[in-house]
Image (cartoon, rainbow, N blue to C red; front, side, top):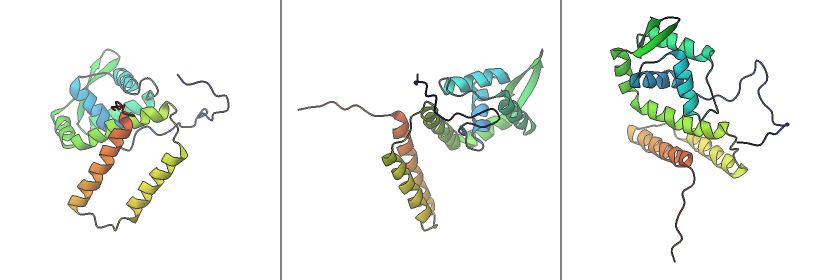
Length: 175
């Protein structure tokens, strides 16, 4: 656990902390969770909290509107169980999830990166500079993205992100 720093800026009441999910990520994550097993909104909150090793917990004000959206889109269905609703994925939802398999991999990769950021792993200036160089290279690209070039750059970026999220590797010293 991190040491308490009284001077560290924390979000105040009514302020947001760092953004954890990219647009559409939470919908896809919830859909994938419900594909594994039906659940209540509270169950989903706890599952997401566990994914983040308790360093992030989505609020009911985020989860329930997302569940409502997925239900209106007929990707999930909700059945009343006492004072709760039990949500389950529909066939339409399973089909949509299958079509988004690559995007779901990206969600899981971003969760790993977000976990590290939420735990306070600040970037050294050298890493910040390298990220800036990457952004610059992407902005300077000619803009003519062929399918092969898209796949090449996508693979490079995803492989790099996975290697960073995995953390340092140890190598044995051999004489």
